[in-house]
Image (cartoon, rainbow, N blue to C red):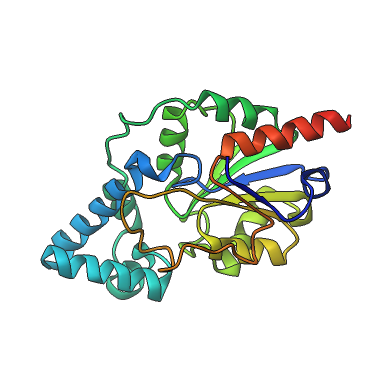
Length: 240
């Protein structure tokens, strides 16, 4: 397990009562193929919506992401599409390749306090994917892009909406996320932050060209979420 520790685990997690997890490429590994499948569906949506060829649709997809934060927000702002139709379409993917992650389920269950998902995707996608991973029933709620008023992470308003909706006190919370820039606001608000890395099978346009961070926004960096949580839980248990 590759874990970068900037501060002792206990010092940064002993006070945590809310554990917040991103979904895509965080609760499941990038090499599962799930995120590329979603990106392919986004491209297909743009092809059908705009009549573009594949290469042009992918370029538009990158443009929307970098200008608006998500392709969905770009389509809503510029074309006025129905968000529900888009979300249903792009998350209509085959999850049969996902296997239950028993170790991760055990460690999330051991965490003391509330567990929530905070995703730029849809609530249904989060719940279906969590169920497939063997994590069903472990999370109090899944806060999605619709609940955030279509404002995506890393914008401040998205986090504010999440904190309000679920009564989360940032200084007593931890955030687990695969995109470094999405940890900037949580870190400023006082959350303990963990960057979950991996080795994606293809380029993810959400990431900066240089993935060799480590970012200032992350207190910890790990490529093994289950193993990292095991260490956290063991230290917390030893404290009692």
